[in-house]
Length: 345
Image (cartoon, rainbow, N blue to C red):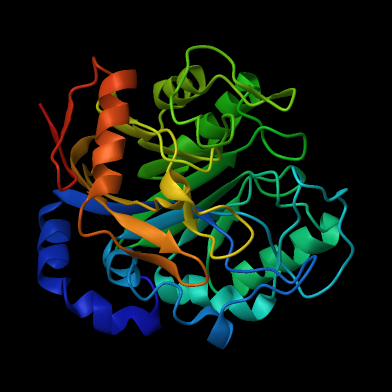
């Protein structure tokens, strides 16, 4: 059981969950991409009712899994001065702290802060963001000078979490020595180890995973194939990415699941949602207690401006991830149906 307020949703799957836990067979994990629920900077762009309708279509999935993770793209703060020179290629996000309960209500257990918007309002913004998440019982990781890892317990299972980014105030995907130290220190303290990363070039044309290092606006955005495999080699069970603002393919490596980008998930304002930029999948995984992949499901959602993710009954999002996976990871033993069901071939 994640949170007291989620009891009703948890009861819907209590028989299945309790049976799996009793037999020690499988665990469930939900993963999403970028979350920025609205901003008061430079102008006010906020959904009504403090965002209470943003997650209504997705919360039944996010609440029912044993653990749910995503990426918080921006700050939770009510003031402060931005540290950025805002332009048409540089943005700063400031979501009011009153929106923080929406994350708990949606079902999130852990969130990455290792992205290029976490310090949009300097250390003040980082401090208020972390304080707001702690008040909701949500774990976080990814910023230097702050804890590199988090461990939470759900149903008697210890889930370890760490997060990496591409810029200087995050634990960087490019620094494999530090990544090894963090993952190696976390592995003995948890049963399931989940790694989040923010990396890759951005934009509608950046939906492929290249070999080698990616750059964007002259900035090193990491060698993501190398990084993800390195994480698994050091003990990661699930690795999921975000950052390009579009979805990318998924891969099975050493029987561990890797998602290279889950795109935008709940970004109703301030981010383009045109075409594939609006694709907002949830990946729901079933894994064994040793962390190995069993099955998965790509739930297709598409964002609508001001509303958040809404169900895609045509499954176009799952089909796009399937297409990209076949192009970029042809040797991966994953099979994805039109409806998004993921199995091992």
